[in-house]
Length: 407
Image (cartoon, rainbow, N blue to C red; front, side, top):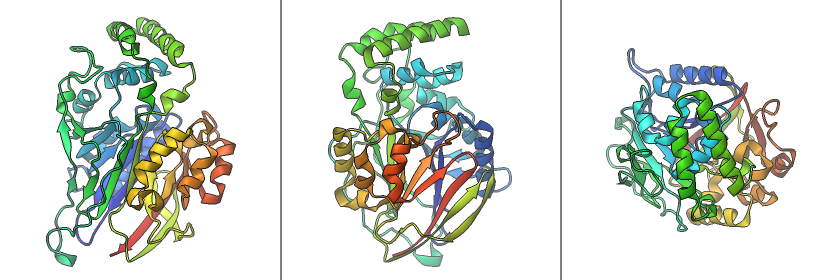
């Protein structure tokens, strides 16, 4: 799973981002794709190309396994990730097929781990807390400050509001986990990421899953977490992991579905409605940034142009769909969200027949490899999105969109 994007205005240096960066079925190909993207960014000799931010939807390996490689290639200014409580992070640890020491360290202390990785020390770490019921504010339509046109060569600035994180937040174990959370920040609830009044990113951290946690569960799982962290060899780690998984399975059931619905949604699009717009779309091939573009036939337009990424999120129940709809509908964001990454590679457990019509995208992106792993996408989900321009992205073929906006 990898999305990369760039925003450019006139002579100004582009604002660049990546959403998710991982694969468990095509690791070598994935790293090759990152290498090609790095080369295409044309950094000055002896320097790394800049990435303004990397957003992680959640902590499963197929969404983050390329992060260390990415940090070695790019100068990343900010890493945006959902805040998961300790018991949620160790649900991932309990269910991991290959729980190595590095992945466990990341789950123990995500901010501290990223700070310690080569290339991650200077990145700003920002957690997105669970989203409250109120929608984010209206877009800031104020004109950008400074010169316009060819004279404008200022760097694009990312504006967001954050709070400092306490040393240990609720649910962390003092002196065991979260000891480096003070090195990170929390995005203020309701805040958006604004790029000079031109473009906005709106993150949504669905909090429904945390509400399912029994009141006493974090306390009962704490000694099992300590045992896992104290394991001195792979055999002891596996024994402790099995005990931890058994406790989660007893409490929540043994389906991976509930663990997989913890995910950060991310909307991105222009702040103002453009007076005119032109689009080209087409396929890319692995390791080759050149693409076979052609006039866009997806129906993208001046009123339908924004992107909405879902990671492994879930919209399979009415409360989840209502929360999602109430968050993104105000100020027309949901109506504009016409490039839609379908949840969890098109898994049936994360969708429902109502979702496709609710979003009504002009391009429905399925990030999956039907020949491997879980054989996603599910046929029922594919049928639901079939009227909405289904596009398959896998370990060989990608999809690219170029949009030119006139304001």
